[in-house]
Length: 134
Image (cartoon, rainbow, N blue to C red):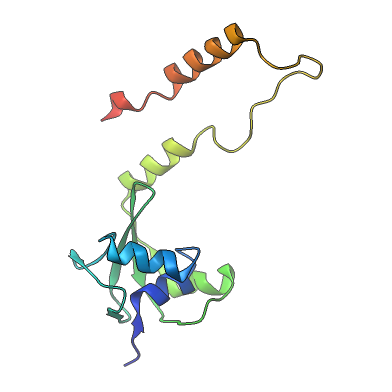
């Protein structure tokens, strides 16, 4: 049965941007398999579930196929299945709202004044106040 290092697989299927980052995540106890922290050299097998803590989110991936070479996103997608719980996905979606496009001002309006900037910050704090959700 084929086995691949967990840091190499996480990099190959594009969960992490570089293998170095994947290795550091493993060393920092941000990668788990069966609720156990794994070292970067852990030999991953097909059928295992990998839990990755990345950017404050707990993502879960079911390993369908093992690859050790980095491939395009379209070729990497069939190698795993995202089995992240729905509650965690909702957390991600609620965080992502409003981050897609930069703010725009009318042409010729210039930079906001200090008063306008403070009003904008107050408005944003009211809308994106996540402390109440905890």
